[in-house]
Figure (cartoon, rainbow, N blue to C red):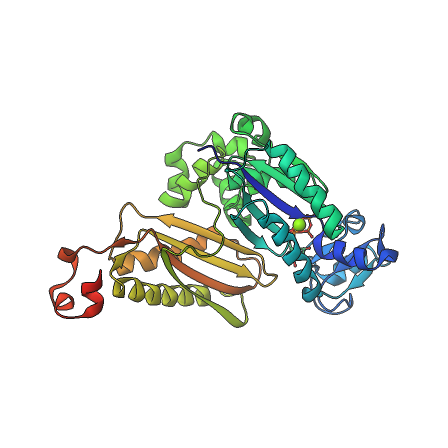
Length: 363
Ligand code: TTP
Ligand code: MG
């Protein structure tokens, strides 16, 4: 079946909520971040489009933002208020599809493949409902997969409605910076630039598969080879799907150190492995989930050539997926999921485990 995916992304979300509840802020530069005091430590969560005109953007220190625009209105982050709008956004989206995958408070994928309406008309209806019921604008991207839907949504902001279909990929992606593709953070971008003189998605398309694999490793290389062609078959997932097992932890305080994350990921993978094997299954797909301090959540998955009982391979795969995330922000939560589970055949169960243990005979 032909897939049609929407990516819905609210415009200047935190700032837009603030401007909505305080009409006197509309049309003014508004910066939301930290405790709202621009003379203290803290970074910009978001800036209204009026403030962006002064060069203020997310993740910039509040002090820098203040230097760029001292007369901006600085406000503290009020997650409770944003969460309420986020919930209302999600319930609107769920009216159009059971397959809604939230990415952060203000962003979600919606799989509308099953609907018969024209996708552009449907996207327009959703935008109108968000405007009427939330009082806010959203930008919507439409595509045959998540990758293209997300790129499309970012192309025309704010209040945009953009589609990218398969036959337009070459032309519409060619001039975008390579970093427009997920999986290309600042580090990978620098390596591609230095080693292969790649700046744009079009440049990346000209690099042979083998060369990408040599530079970035077999999996990451192949992944990018497909991404720059607009190819992505990752499904829209609502929550962790039932035929899977997973573990996640929320840190007491946000973590920045890569080594700490790797240690936790390996431990989670060990725990899931024990559970999966206990239940009599072998996994084939490993997914790593990372939620950043601002609740933005991303997942990366890798499917192995076949289901495996090789614990070290599974742990290495889970840990290796961390390379596909940009670790430029503190992390609040990590999760590991094993899916694509197949019942473990008796003849691969070790002899001692097969004798009499209820867990081993259940598979
Ligand atoms: P985004 O959708 O990236 O940004 P935005 O909605 O403010 O602006 P636009 O989509 O129009 O470009 O992020 C959504 C919210 O997440 C944002 O309002 C604030 C928060 N956020 C942070 O707290 N820190 C960040 O670094 C980013 C990028 C977002
Ligand atoms: Mg947004």
